[in-house]
Image (cartoon, rainbow, N blue to C red; front, side):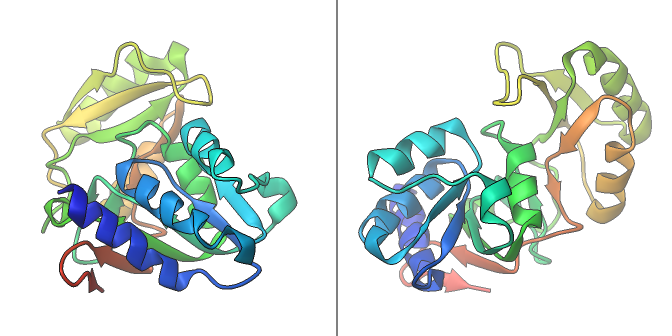
Length: 215
């Protein structure tokens, strides 16, 4: 599957234009994109990163990491996903960077999602849905989500986000209306962000393969 991830990451380079500040996500597929981006680093102004992990990799390649507040509106954001449905709606957050990823996606005119074939699903929810929560609200949010969805929230113990918060992974869901569920979970006090990218889905999805599939 690493070949498919590499193919997807390298294909996304086609969307990078000269002079861009590129939004960059987090994860194993994105790592291939960053490595490919390094080969054309002289053509771009820099990158806005969704995690400390990606920032370190970008800087290691000599790519300047720019704060989103200074970059303003971005033309392009490239990131992976844990699941993708036919409507290009996503589950993200397996790497615990969902809040910053969602912020950069919102700030970007085009969101290109890069995945391997195993991430394609008909209905979201096979992958546990990550929810970033304020630590003191962990149990409250878990009870509310259980009552709301019937899914089983599990605390991802030992993991803190780059924002200093915790993650609940909600198991046992079949998400037939991801836009509505995203809105409902976001209304629970203590929720920072939910790993549903449905209100703002991907614009383009690249599935690694020979050749990569773009839809």
